[in-house]
Every structure is written in C-alpha cells, then in structure tokens.
Picture 1 (cartoon, rainbow, N blue to C red):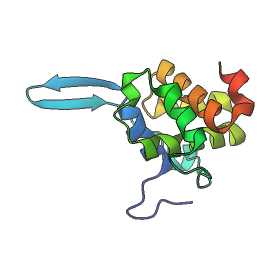
Picture 2: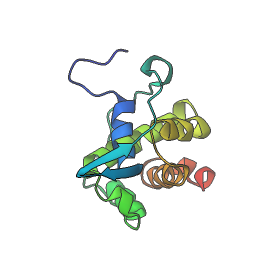
Picture 3: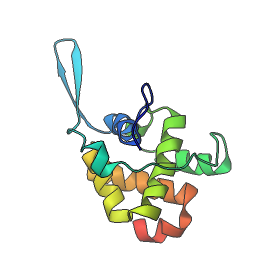
Picture 4: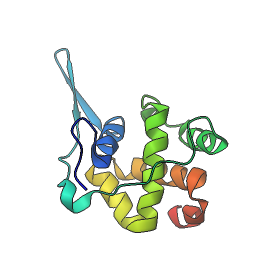
Length: 134
C-alpha cells in the first residue's frame, strides 16, 4: 500500500509524535529536533485500521492520564496521541510487542518514552497486552 499524495504515512506520523520526545539542540534562534532517519516505508510500514474510539472517550482519558506526568507528551496534539496509540495496539496484534517498540525507537522515540507510550496505549485500547508491556 503506497502513501497517497498529501497523506502522511503511519511512520511519518509516528516520527512526528516522537519528535516531541526526541532530543533537541538550540543554535542561535533555531531549535533542531534530532530524530534518526526513518527506515524505508516498504519494509516497515504498519497500517492500522481507523480507530474505533474518537477523542474524548473513556479510553482516550485513560491514555491521557497515563501520559499526563510526562511533559514530553504534553505538546503532542491529543488526536495524534490517540491515533498513534491505536497503531501501537495494531502493531502488537500484527508484528508483536518487541518489533513495535523497535519501530517506535527507529522513528525517534527514546526507549523509556516508547515503553511508556506503549504501556499507556495498552492500558487504554488493548489491555490484553498490558501485563506483557510492564
């Protein structure tokens, strides 16, 4: 499945979420977010079905409460957090927990942020994986 013009790929969106959790460097008046290069979309793309829960559901509130104590997630739009959390659960279902976390790290998440986000996603949307992500 190729990316349509004007539509971001799941990995590109994941990288955008990760940018809020990556390292930054400030030079003069420019801030540079340092995110490792993304792997090729053909070998790593994981497409999730559309999320069943819309922002504002009880499940969404669980996700937000799990991430509330970490300032690196506060600047990320809530809709994007929800969308990516559904993709994390879809990744758990299709490629497994280890590979999903690895792809999050490839997209720029530090390990501790990837694990925290994956655990929050599991708590909110796929609790069958919760015991396995702690």
